[in-house]
Image 1 (tube, rainbow, N blue to C red):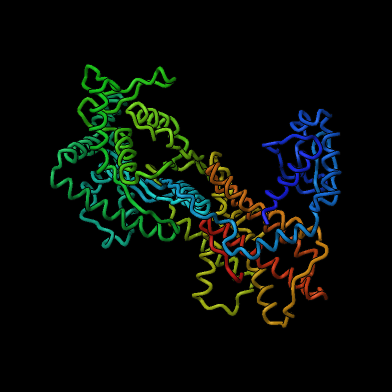
Image 2: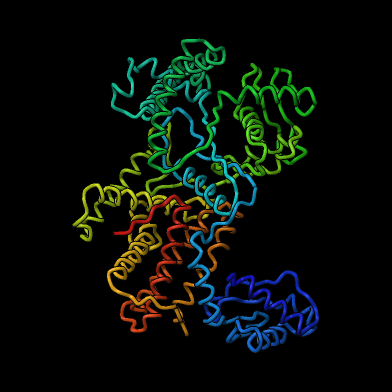
Length: 592
């Protein structure tokens, strides 16, 4: 039974009977917690039809619903708001339909396709805390779209060319002495990142020496020998010099192997990888085509630009005077290639930090000016940066929070806390290791996803892993508690009788109402590109169930029919919690 649809139908019929007119868009919302009821009808618009005041309109509708609908037992009016109390018989029907639906909340295919890009790292350093939020966010949005019936393509663009990778290459060439991941014992991405940090250290030292000898800061930065080498290597790469290409392939290969290990532990996946080194040439061709059509213009030094001042922006360079491309060039090429590869996609979502908001405004405008109608379906999922109690991260200085290290620390802390609770003494080491992985990574993912993506956030590892509070482990513990209840039920003989519930406790009504809202929250999460909506729904559902658990002792119930209901009730809550957490990439354990 779809409560929302049934209630709307009953209200429309009541309005038609009372006032002889139809209402297309009913404003129905959850009742404010300080008033009795679960659904509130906003009656101000209906007053235009009734020709009466909003309060009188609400009273008349409420009285008719109570007397004739069979769905409403009581009502109260607060100004023009009609708060409705649903009959327990209706709630039990709602619950029964949810309990029988083993794929509850997941919609059938709607034949629409969407592409979600996330991760998109540079190949000069390992993934860090910011990448964790990016990956968890993009992957979860993709899964939420799947749950809403879409066919989803998960992709990333790997920024594998440019001055950043040449800096690591230059430092390795000067100071690496042939070091490899195998000889160093380091993951490939960490080894390359080590030389990126080394480049910055040497570059600063050389600039300091040049400035001490009288050079200006600007001159020193251009004349530092290690920077000259990096720029020379970039030029040689563009010229396809074999020696530089081979070093580039080798070092990028190290990074990819390291990334794969990190992605596996994160639990994220991709359908297709795009590489900047393969898309920037298409972007250059497209810019030259736009130049011929007069969409872009060339300056005296030979550089190609787009003028967006009429759109409230500014001028943006697309090709440098030496003909080399910029980030915008490759993004143009990548977007076009994706729509060629997947011509049925209706939307392309870019999961990129909010410091790139201007970049994507420019990109989407350029694509539209080039004549691509799908440009209006490109969306920048802009998210805030992640701060730490210790301050901002800087990858050039090696002060970032490494993703691998953070995940390992979270898992270790989860294992430590689990042992201290002393409830898993009969677990094997393998089982304890698996449980620690679930709890540690669940805590990390939930904490990073529970905040609205658009907001900057502070990540507190100690707070994130607590069993009590707004955390992933709290939800996991609730799920494990329900599994314990169901195991106990399986060990005792419960008569096989029809379920019959005459009256519900307030906590039961509250939980069923929340269960009925799960599909609504899923649709909202897709519409808002916000896993936070799913995360907070799961937390609220777990909290409401715990309220039920604290007030209603399940196994003390003498009525076998009611006992059966409460067990099925618990089982359904567990199912929805499991499904909601899975959309966040979080596993839930059967024991904690």
